[in-house]
Amino acid sequence: MTVKELEKIAADKADLIKVRKIVREQAEELAKNTGYRKQVLVCGGTGCTSSHSHQVIEQLERSFAELGINDVLIVKTGCFGLCALGPIMIVYPEGAFYSQMTPEHAKTVAERHLIKGGEVVKELLYADTVHADGSIIPFAEIPFYKHQVRIALRNCGVIAAESIEEAIAAGDYAALAKVLTSMTPDDVISQIKAAGLRGRGGAGFPTGLKWQFTKDAEGDVKYVCCNADEGDPGAFMDRSILEGDPHTVLEAMTIAGYAVGASEGYIYVRAEYPIAVERLKIAIDRAREKGLLGKNILGSGFDFDVNIRLGAGAFVCGEETALMASIEGKRGEPRPRPPFSAQCGIYKKPTVLNNVETWASVAPIILNGAEWFSSIGTEKSKGTKVFALGGKINNVGLVEVPMGTPLKTIVYDIGGGLPDGKKFKAAQTGGPSGGCIPATHLNVPMDFDNLTAIGSMMGSGGLIVMDENTCMVDIAKFYLEFTADESCGKCTACRIGTKRLLDILKKITEGNGEPEDLEKIAELAEHMKTSSLCALGQSAPNPILSTMKHFGDEYIKHVYAKKCPAGVCKSLLSYYVNPDKCRGCTLCRRNCPANAISGEVKAVHEIDTKKCIKCGQCISHCKFGAIEIK
Image 1: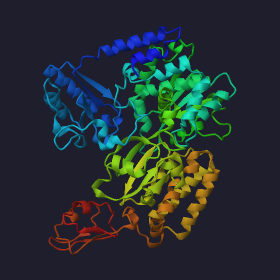
Image 2: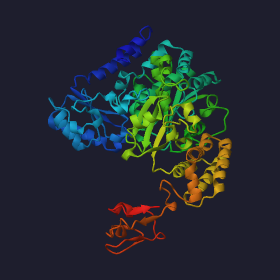
Image 3: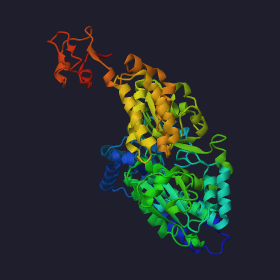
């Protein structure tokens, strides 16, 4: 959407003063950025920042000053998605994709590529972007991106994350202008309903229906709320959207405010996301300056503003009623439902609550139409889904694919498969509330209903890949440790149930499991699912139940044979020296912190299993592969 098209949207309205003022100011700002010979886009998301992308930018600026380069623009963007290769830097117009950049690499690129008449530094390019003849493969055609359809992430890695001018030029606020000048609240809600957009926060509730309930609820005061309290281990979808394109969330919340009759909104974001929080603050201030938030937005007479509330990192505050209690300054604890938030939310007023990814899909629906959005995905799961791809996978990062994309496509075609040629064993979706997908379901279409049918769930979008060396009992224990620690303790079923399940899993992984423990798990899990107050307790048993369903043989071996097939549970392992391989070099003995290894030079060594702490130092130092695990 261009700036001229934004103005054209409201061309038939009498009061266009503010619209034209915004467009003119934006055009003037963008004009300052014209005439650049090249643009260098550097990722400024959390992943690349932690890999020192800011040092790359600083080095570019120093090199430009030294070389007299004044016609190349440096743009700090949000996440490009391919986090495993960060810091990432892309140079246009060539589309040269430089990966794993260092300040020294940046200096080299400046001296050889960015000077006038320079050429691409091919040895620093991401390998998948280069043909055999050395020519560059278009960005959208490399394996990681060509299977993706970017809607929620459309502007991430494309625009300067802190520039409202670039956000508007990329299409942000065009949907708001359309809504305020040519659509009624009922029109807006009808379009969201027709698109089939379901909440991306986990439950998958129809977004349009939620908006309708809030609009129809009684009350003069209503609220719009964004859940940015992303707490699942390994999940970073919402954070990346807020860091790369915060205006898309502000715009969507304003549209929802118009649709349901609210004039105030809250974004609840965890304080552990400092970059996201800072960019949200900048975006809100700039939107207010431009007349896109606050009083009389775009001269329409509609008022709406947004406030930020910081969460302290409590996982339970991802539950909507606990989140709203925290916004009110109370302890973040869930309450019984009904009444639901659409009727009784923040300060007991009707409230619309959606997560970041859901909000990021709203403006494209308004601009492109419900039919366009509903043509993507499956019959009951429309549009796209963003996944945080992590674990034992080559291309760790952020991906957005049409609903219904097979898991195999995500893992192998986009994710690049597993490191070291290891076999795929399972994928965990839905975080602590989800379940594990075994290799037998590798072709499962990734949508709400298919995942539920095999004992997992979509959740917010974390997708953790596990290889053949993963112990599924240990994985279940890991997630139970998390939920037991994060339980608010308000209801007995969750407070005590998570602890008891964790105790049983610890007992099994320590080699003390008994056959009746497996029955206790099933019984206790059922009680928790039916008796817990909120989704944290209701879904806490899911990782155990799904691993028992798909990997029940591992539980049996842990309990009956006292063996861990994956060689992970230390209490069930024994280290020993293979006499046929030992050369008596003494490296294992000299590096054993427990003095558990004995033996003379050039003689076969032995390990005292009573002293052995199973730290693995002997394995890492043995050059002959003589240390083995039983």
